[in-house]
Amino acid sequence: MKPLILISNDDGYHAKGINSLIDMVSDFGEILVCAPESARSGFSTAFSATTPLRLKLRRKREGMNMWSCNGTPVDCVKLALSELCPRRPDIVIGGINHGDNASVNSHYSGTMGVVREGCMKYIPSVAFSLCDHRDEADFEPLRKYVRTILSGVLRDGLPKGVCLNVNFPLASEFKGIKACRMAHGTWGSEVVRARHPRGYDYFWLVGKYTNDEPEAEDTDNWALTHGYVAITPTTIDVTDYEMIDKIKGILRKS
Amino acid sequence: MKPLILISNDDGYHAKGINSLIDMVSDFGEILVCAPESARSGFSTAFSATTPLRLKLRRKREGMNMWSCNGTPVDCVKLALSELCPRRPDIVIGGINHGDNASVNSHYSGTMGVVREGCMKYIPSVAFSLCDHRDEADFEPLRKYVRTILSGVLRDGLPKGVCLNVNFPLASEFKGIKACRMAHGTWGSEVVRARHPRGYDYFWLVGKYTNDEPEAEDTDNWALTHGYVAITPTTIDVTDYEMIDKIKGILRKS
Image (cartoon, rainbow over all chains, first blue to last red; front, side, top):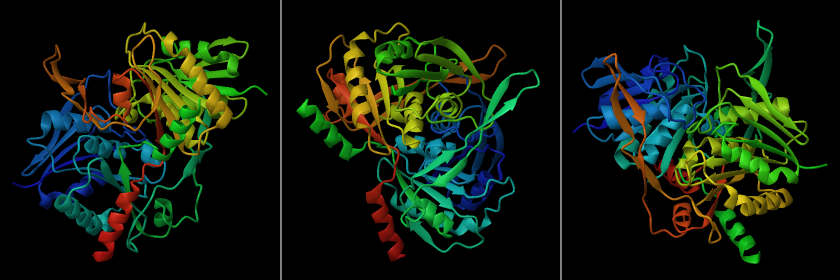
């Protein structure tokens, strides 16, 4: 039986990134897409606890069904697994995202939400993102790498509880692939105050990202700024094991 | 100068949990609350990229200002840090949540969103949650432990990039505190289909949680089901370092 590939994103089912991805991977197996009906950037691993969700079939052809959902990226995966998939998917793919999801952006990212949800269901899951926010971003240079990574993961799987966060620099050719750790970085100047015509203040969230360790060559941020594809293997288990021992020491003393 | 304590949650500024917390910690310092104007359970580390945000002063007394925000738990922290805090807070506290945030719920949790956001800003951050979803849950048994943990963190700080996820079992007395790792668990039966009066199907997300390693005594789920307070130190760095080496090996071979 052909592999079943579940695809979602956070930019919406109509985005160029997800449609480029479908085009790149269609011959690998049967494709099921369930993606938000409009943009859900910054939705992280959020799910809808109180919103009634709806599904709409948007496109259907031999080997490819595309659905949209009014919920979050995670909702899309949950609904697809429960209501749409003819069997358990062999892989969950998030993306291709318009904009990078390296460093702390991994936490905010709805694309990573897709992949975390797949991974929490013990399905091999991979996120692809390109450092280009534009609607018309060119995803074509990614094709070869996306296909190589997809065929590797379909062949070998991934360890339980580990997903891949793959980020591509904005370039027409890449220098290679680097397996990276997540950089420490911070967002600042995040709030812009504005004045509503009715006379009250409101706020927009924006901000500027700073890589707090620009010299660290083992990080995703470094790889991206130096022209490499960054693969950051990402865990669901977010325990800090060193700190467990420290706390145990404190508890014994008290 | 008295410590500045920034408090938020995902149940909303009116919830019993956050108000119990304020009462428990008010004498430690100056309190600034910025919490969602209504419930935001399951909002994870989401922020509002496209929604105009508003702040409302809800309550004000000597040493305590409480604001509400129409955004996510993370939005509350970002706006508080940028617009409301008279100085950098000494600690960010999330909670006390009505319902547990152990195991994979850590990823979905808006309470943990609060704390991740504080931690990503390099501020010591602690989440408190009680295994009781009810509006009228009794938080009083937690008082002693919340105060002990808060004074410890105010005194010693926390390592950069590590926050604490503290969960309390539903009990009138606790057997003690355990430093834990996050359990592997899964949500199943998550989708319930319903029929709208207008004749279309819609879906509610619900579900049943299963602890996939109930015998593992070093996990948060085990601690909670056996009457202990569970402290799970949680990292912002979600890199799987073992997997980096494996991928490097594969890349060298290919």
